[in-house]
Structures are given as structure tokens and as C-alpha cells.
Image (tube, rainbow, N blue to C red):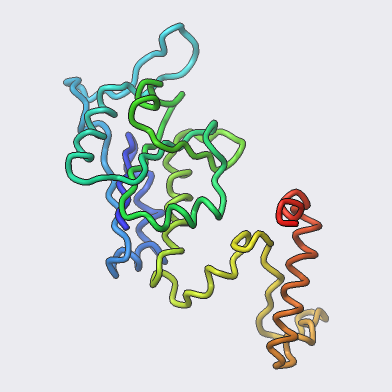
Length: 227
């Protein structure tokens, strides 16, 4: 998979993609992540990419020209299954959406900033709008990093144990069960004996029931959707 990310603040994305699982995935050639500085596509001699909003009001808006020039330039090089805009008023990101996007070959991700981007870019070029929650961040960079991380770990070979992603919370509509490691007794709190039994069938049944109980308690709306 190749992910192209457009941002006016590229340094915000250096750390999320420079360590741990995402770095190893790039080193193995399982995913390519290319960050594009929006200012490089500005026609303004000072490389300005934002301006005041028509109609007044606080906050700046990312201008149409740099975004359009950037998107068209990248689309000349390859075809994208989705051109995604990270925005608080987008569709709420979830595991099902991550699964879908993980099957694509090329995605282009646009990070808004300030008060967002010129609506005409959304109307003409954007094919999907995503929000990671009902709150507002300073820009789309961190939200974009969340989406890329969630999608990348679903690509075969990215995780050392490919079954790990299949047992994540929300993968089957349920929250993941509690997990324990050594020592078996910590400050008087013992690991459930079933997990030490060696009976995998009973362990799996216990975990499944724990997932159901936890989902009913913490995400009753999600549980009802699965019923």
C-alpha cells in the first residue's frame, strides 16, 4: 500500500511514522508513506497557503489553489482509490472502515488545518471525509496518523503475529477480553485460573464470554448493533 499525505506542517508527522511497527513496515516495503509539504505547491512568492474566510469570522482557511495543484500533481502519477479529508464533520472512523481501506493500493490523505479547507476542494476532489471523534484538533495531521496506523497494522506481514489484529477490540464487534502476564500473583491479585489450565477450548470460551460482558457494560450500543 502507498499512502500520500498532504500537510502544511510536515514535521508533525515525522515521529508517528518514524518508530515501532510503522517504521518496520516501511523498512520491509509493506507500506509506503510519503508526506508532501503543501507550501511547495503554492503560487504565492511567500509560499502562503491560507487566507481569511469570506464572510468574516475568526480563523484562517487553507486556500484552494495549493491544494488543487498538489492533488492534480499527485493524481498524474497514480490513481487513488480514495482521496480522504480529515475533518471533524466527516464519517466516524471505525474498525470496519479501517478493514476496508487496508485493501486499497493507493490512498491520498489531506490534512486540514486552522478552520479547514476551501469547500470547493471538498466538492471537487475529496471522495471520503473521516473524523476520528466528536472533538476538534488543531489540524488533521494527528488524526491522519491515527488512520494510517489503524490501517497499516491490518496489512499482511506488518504484525509479527498476523492473528493479533484479528483479536483486536471491534474486529468482531466486541471489545477484547482482559489480558494478563507474569507473575501469576501480583500484590494478592491472581490471574484467573482458567488461563493457567492449558485447556484452549475452555480458555477461548472464557475469553469470548468476557468480551460479551465487557461490551455489554462499556459499549451497550455497540452490543445491541451486533445482536
